[in-house]
Length: 84
Image (cartoon, rainbow, N blue to C red):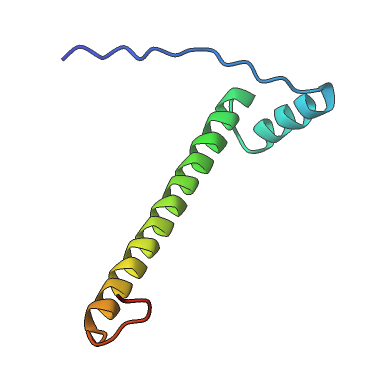
């Protein structure tokens, strides 16, 4: 089976010289072959964790709305405030 081609695009991120030195040193210290590899890894981890946090928040909101809906449906149907 032929290997699928992956298209990559360059993205420019500007660092001052001190930041660039720290980035390259960190990449080497952590065993990444290039600073780009380290940046890719960090970005994907960060984006993944934010997506998971967003999903968690959404699930909590849905659960709260479900609970409130059940509470309202169980409330007495008699006279309600502001009813006409």
